[in-house]
Length: 363
Length: 77
Image: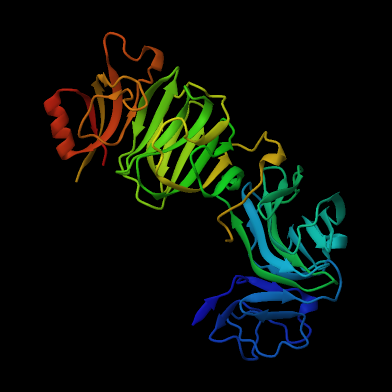
């Protein structure tokens, strides 16, 4: 069996190469053996005693000791700093452990805490702070012991998410264009990493959730949205009816997307107590399809599994309303709905508190 | 099977209630969008008319031709 390791494309920092350094580009067969080549695409690993990096069950552990801020892993593949670039690490740490997550402008291993031309974030036990070029810029809350850390570039700055919640925002041009991810170690307790990626997010805004209804969504469950937003949910079963309401003012004034028992996917407007169908999809919804409604200005679009179904461009009613819900004004409401999420459409002028989730990169 | 992007002018049906909403008076066309965007408050003036855009197949196009509500057609793909 060949297993592509989540650290493929990374190399060890120099201080981790001293004794039986390991490079888990890719594992072939069982994780046993002794050979290692830094430039090899394949490494088999046996005796890990003496090294500060260990591998077991697909996880990689940075052992305690050494110097804070020394890069343990450096991404060999650079990227261009651009809005939507995300550097994401998933892992866990014992109490008082630490790990750093940086985007730097060099592949040369450097001590991030002193001389780095980079921007990032360093966790050390309960102390957690943001650095830019070696200078502490902000204190942030501790993320706890299990986390998905994400640094996401914007056009002229950067923000970070922990476990889907906004952690900090740094509104400043990084000053460079080529970036390389660095993971740095701490001198405290061990840190275990499950995966690391430097990846573009097609749309920086697409990963930003402003509200979510986790699990089954019942009639009357409400959510908030910006008047321009993206709403999506999983249609777990078909029955008459499913109505996801948005731009809701009152029972007589709102919009809703409707799914019928036969799978028909429609856009409805309700104004002044009158109701009209404004669009109907050409494709029927199937159970467990992911449905998306994008509301932007006077255009409302519907998608089934990312396939466009309708674009209604005359949605001039209720354009500033920001409340949504699963319908409870009409009945029946019997379709199965789960995991509804609401995303922003434009983060350019939004308060950072709106950003509270990231999905779809590391599950 | 060829598909066609069509624009249709037809009349409204329904009474505007949640169980009988206003909707274009069409059959045989499932995927469509209201192009007119007429406000609900005056959706039934005289004349009673609505324009929709839709994508149809050959059979649906033939049926629409018979209904004489087809105002424009373009081969889509």
